[in-house]
Length: 266
Image (cartoon, rainbow, N blue to C red; front, side):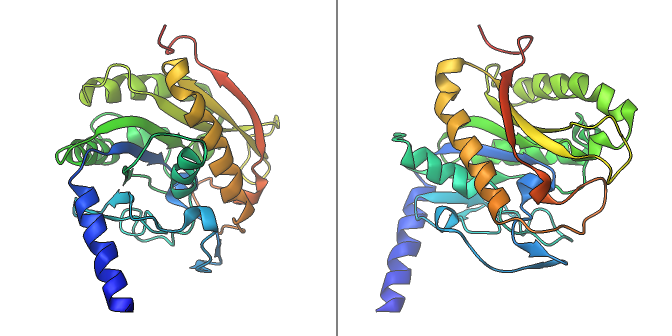
């Protein structure tokens, strides 16, 4: 009976891989790659209900094949590090729970822990990988609905990096929209930022804000469920012993939502 069930699930997933998908690109650093449940370099294996597999939720693997998504989503992408729970699966669960007409969802993991935004500039390995994986994701049908971007802690270590962040982010969005041939591609940006005047690592405490870049009507539900997904991830996040300016996930809490007028579509 168990084998029959597994065959049916595999068959359903293979069918889903060949139908039109609502595709979301997951990019950024460790918060997106997933460190929830990781303590002292080991993941505890606990998967919250909202992050459990669904035959209609797929992920693009490192070898560019669609498969049923399961945590950790970035296990074969953010290699050399221990991945745990991130916001991707909970985001999809939230879409469905909020009445979205989304049927088959394709997640494209691209995040890499400990990376500053300059590591994502056009021409870098991470940028090329994101564009390549995004292009591969639409070959079997579907459309990229948004980029989910969760990054910024590593850019709070020095004042110079923090001051340059906005300009670097604007350039990144412009370049991605151009290279993906999606001039109005929505970007949901979770931005950690300091609420302390101190810049020194480990003396900074963070909150996060969501910056909604795109058409307002299209993004209202994305905004709502991304907030829920990020807060849920924090609930299962333990202390992190990672380096590169990344702090413990439990230091994060929801703060506010705002927009970048210079990039928002009118």
